[in-house]
Image 1 (cartoon, rainbow, N blue to C red):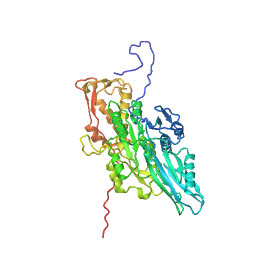
Image 2 (tube, one colour; image 1 turned 30 degrees about the horizontal axis):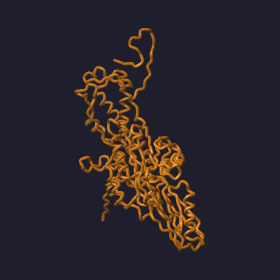
Image 3 (cartoon, helix red, strand yellow; image 1 turned 120 degrees about the vertical axis):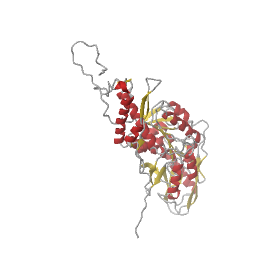
Image 4 (cartoon, rainbow, N blue to C red; image 1 turned 60 degrees about the vertical axis):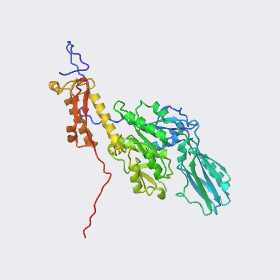
Amino acid sequence: MMTFNEIPTNWLDPAVFGEVKPNYTKKGVLAYPEKTIVVSQKLAGGTLTAGRIVEVTRADEGYAHFGEGSIGAEQVVAFRKANKSTPLYVMAMDDAAGATAATGTITFAGATSVSSTLYFKIGGRRVYITALATDTPTALATKLAAAVNADTRCVASATSALGVVTLTAKNKGACGNEINVRVDRKAADLPAGLTATIVDMAGGATNPNLQTALDAIDVSWFTKICVPWNDTANLQLLDTWLKARYVATAKLDCHGFVYKSGTFGQRTTFGDLTNCAFVTCGGLYRSPTSPWVHAATAMAVASFFLTQDPARQLKSLVLPGVEAPDPADQDTQEERNFLLQHGMSADICMDDGTVVINRMITTYKKTTLNVADDAWLDIMVPATNSRIRYDWSGYVNLTYPRAKLVDDDRAVSVRRAEGDTAAGAAVVSPRIMKGAWASRCQVYERNVWIENVQETLAMSIFERDADTRNRMNSKQVYQIVGNLMVQAASLEFLV
């Protein structure tokens, strides 16, 4: 029996009606509505009201929303530098009440024999001054402080006295402790006779409470989120929130990005703070680039390329604007391997100073029973699962929006009636639904998201619930396609 949505069954007046509706049986995968958000700190000069969410299309909007020299502005600029097409939303948060700002110093001593240009980097931004042969350390400190303050987009401000430049993070909180300060020796070394002793940024404390922001977007659709706060409390709040969004009854899949700079030991400890398939952590030791910029860039690259193909690894992709540490501070291959075992994504530093992704992972390492497990290790796993779940749910709603559910034996008489698989199909049974699943799996296989389809289809089960006749239960098995991560070869030469 053919059913119609628009043509009455009791119409008697002679007429020719044509009901137009789409047929989705040959439809490819549904477009995934990628939507990212940066939640970050603002300054008083930022125009965005704390807690408000707005879309950002241009990098410079970050300076207006968060204020020049803010952490939030740097994250927006970093994201848009790496990804100009993915929708980006932002939410601003004020510094926490009672927070303290990180400080650091640069102390000049000695003198220059000849006039020269001195180069420094503050949070990855280059600052330079002209040093005259007659300049004293006090004069040099005065010049450098003025140069730092002239760069309104620098994340620190400066004062000087008696040859010492004191840097103060513009945003208060622990994030300021990770602002890298250095002599930019790649541009030029200090002239003979002059020294600049650096005391790293420290003393910043009390980050904003992330829960306030998470509550504000709790039921909103966002596929990726990036925050600058890598303290234990906020990271665990993010972990809990992301896990809750992924459950079947929520189905608001989202992936978080939080990075940290630090020693090898500090970073392995950081990676072990969570065990979450929906959090990606990473970071470098003594990179000029702040970890919140690194995280925003990683999210930008991942959101673009995983939308194109969620099952394809991100290895070899450049992280634009992320600067490699000095060679002595870079991770060895063995250290990268250990970091991966602790839930930290691995990046490779190139000779030209660029940083590329080697393996982007989640912090998932073990089951709830403390059994080592790599099922959710790579970021492609949750990405592919989310795409398949989103596509299948959309396909079922498009194809069977008002369907009646019958047993397979009853469906024999109505199945394959003309139009019964089009949108608005009147009847569905477990066997019909399994056929639809088989059809979608072929689409996923053509996109090389999954493999071994025939085997997994045989393992898939669809059945009508014995107690609730309006419910169909199913076990839908699929195998995500593999990626070439390691190639182990025995190279044997004949003698």
